[in-house]
Image (tube, rainbow, N blue to C red):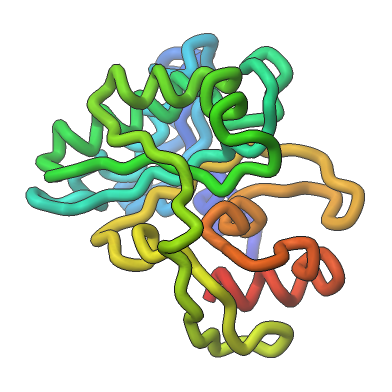
Length: 216
């Protein structure tokens, strides 16, 4: 990849809210008509930056169709309030839920297989209240709704997965970037553990390969 292509790949996919208008001349000079598949948004408001990033990708209707059953999968894993940034920001979750409905989604479900007590995690994170206020159907994980799914993987050949996630028309994975003692950084792939059943501690024994297999 030469310098020009690198700049295209980096800048065409971004939106800089903190510097209004500053990026547009650059984009124009780099044939910015190309479609972005990655967006970076900066700003103070989580809701506004979330919408800006989605708009940069072509808008929510690029992903959600009328009548879709959508699962929004945040990280609600910990009994922590939003300022600790241990879980997905509730404003981000609420914004995505709201946008899905604006695109015509029939139902938008929000859930996570938490590490801590689910009632405390859902409440303390602020996600339950924010998602519900936006019209999201917030529920706790039901242990009866896991079923074994065959995986075309190397480390994992099958694993119990949550049926409501597997049967949705669309899944929107909304992690939060965090440091991790095994994987250094956790993002979307590790967030899939929130739809996995069984003894998830086993995943950490071969975390890189296992998460890659699930993501397939």
